[in-house]
Length: 112
Length: 110
Image (cartoon, chains in turn green, orange):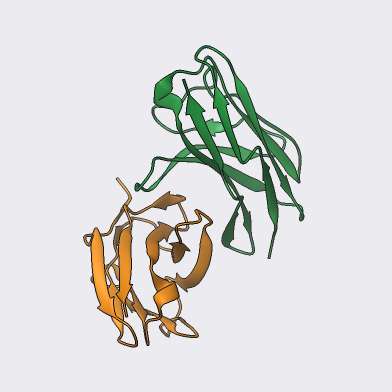
């Protein structure tokens, strides 16, 4: 199994600012993913982040708004840029290992 | 489009009884896998069970089993002997596309 440390666990931010979320995996993994989840709803895939290549974004998500870094096989960051209240959500990172997805504990973001 | 469908937004089950949570999928891939995850109110995502498209037998993990019907493209989760701690959201997930179904909120009644 894999343990993923995600931080911050929660933050309250002002509109127009940016927040960077970090995820550290205790195993080397090729594929990492970033999801967004609104309360009571399912997870929506933002992007896939493979080490050594540019992140692949899903429809409705763009690199300028959600830049992702993947500098090595154990670490990734997601930045939520120029935030608005509509970005308030839970953001989850995950890593694929042994055909399973393991998840960080999530970042609860509130934008005022 | 490849998608996962969970048609039960909410389910109730009496403690100690069995419950089935539905999941159907739409894929054109010859090889695929389906997962179930549990998300309690704490928000963590917990892996429960996995079924590969070429697996000959239905997957089982303790009280969890999958009723996999490939021709019908369904992979229903069966929880036996429900416990109060089973109350949570349950998500079906497509291995190939990393998409999740809309989820089923299960409430176990004492």
